[in-house]
Length: 145
Image (cartoon, rainbow, N blue to C red; front, side, top):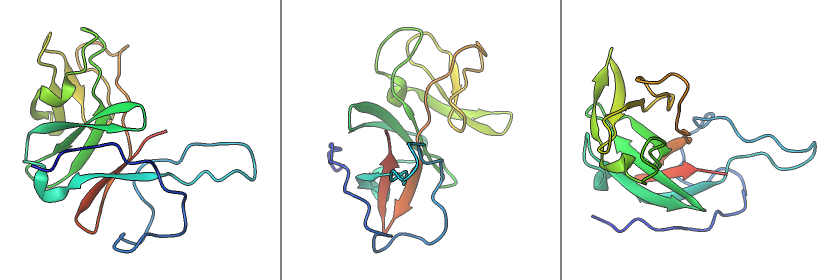
């Protein structure tokens, strides 16, 4: 597997080659009027490096991000920090589904987190951050603040 590493975000200069047209997933962060609010995408690995139903961790900026590829090929990116144990371990969790939606079960205390929303299914008051993720020319890219 290719080693996942931090890549400084490039200044936006239009649509990178190989990027599918249309609006990328996720919502760009909002800033003051006139400030560039386009998401900055960081390539983290090749799509083929992600094994279905297995997580990996990537450092994007100062954020540890857990990346997942489901059996049907969907990509998800959530924070790697388990809010119950305080450990950076969600990328090592067990991937499955709950009510037809993809989840990861923390390896520490077994709480389930939605890969789509970050919400904890065991404690609705707790959630982990989710990040926009996309496939661009065979590379998995994540946008983190």
